[in-house]
Length: 142
Image (cartoon, rainbow, N blue to C red; front, side, top):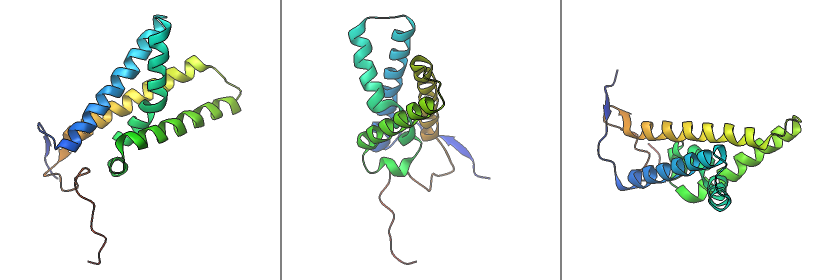
């Protein structure tokens, strides 16, 4: 059994990933607060755009390190739009269209995924032989 240790300093790429995760968490949390409190319209619209184009995809990319090598922001946008479209189509197909309920489920799942990604990045087994943010693996014969 490998010992698990807490990593206090991260490589620059992991620090950028952590910053993006925190930005996504603030976006989701702020939107949840504004929706529940029936806050002002303009900030709610701006946070909705940020949430739609970034937060769910960031939760996916944060937990899929090999995908983050391509483009952390670009892949987050692609996965966000795909996941939200799939969720909306599924809810429509099931004849349970409830936009607020759908948003709440998506926001909670995204926050959970982002939190898990932050913890996973900081806690790693042993010496961390499989670095998700290191160089590309060699494709040669062994």
